[in-house]
Length: 373
Image 1: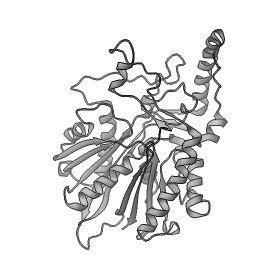
Image 2 (image 1 turned 45 degrees about the horizontal axis):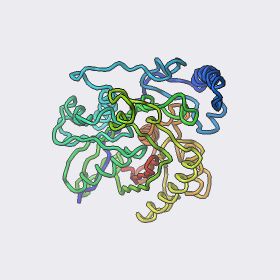
Image 3 (image 1 turned 120 degrees about the horizontal axis):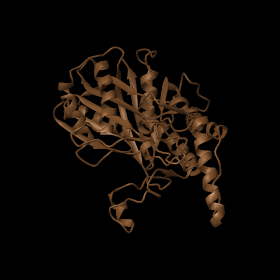
């Protein structure tokens, strides 16, 4: 069985951003108009949002989005992303390719030597042709390409699978890409979720190590693990059967189809499950929580991460121990933990151990233990 390492890391953060103040202003203009309508028919009113609530609830102060136009328009409240022809590179593949090319440059390899491309993300632009196959074509890679997803654990699940495929010898060089355009699937009129998410794309190159080989500055993947347990507390119903629920099968009713969550239940249940997962995963591989130099956690909620680390370590963890990026880019779903890794690994010393851990819809949790070479 081969040893496995990460030879390249890439992250793409779109330049467009939206502050809490901007988002709240747009949301509350819509709330005023919506409540006038609701008063007229005797419906319950919508509660306005505010920046302090957002920071308290999530830690998010700003989010980057693939396309800003339309999001802050109270009459639209969704990004305006024009359709592309079938012969044009799709939006999500193009976004993923930006991160993929950075990872390829970081690894210093020829894209033609990649023999497997995996696109693993919480939402996919289409069922087929696979986005991974489209990216494979644009890069000039060969072999196999396929799409997969496991909510916000998608990148971690992709590492788990890629590590196994390389370890077994089934593939020699795997490109894992996670393009997340969550703003396109977000209901900006839902007070529970409108402020949480941002967009980002990340990519990793995963390869075998020869016996006795070392790659200074890179990370060996020493272990991976996944876990799932069904829950409706984070859910997206968007799918091809949705169009059949209305009177016109050529019109898709969007109410109830986009991301929704029961925030308080998710917070409590996932916090406990993630802390238990981390402690058991580390112990089964001969580590204690104190052995971990750096924790790259899913960037969902600052308070949740702080509590997970407190339950895991028995003490608070500072930014150096557990970097936070969600305050300035938002919750970028499965991409967040890898953004934290890409931005916060170069100072680590040979022999240092780090942990990637992501958690989310499913419920699902994924982890990878990395050793700096």
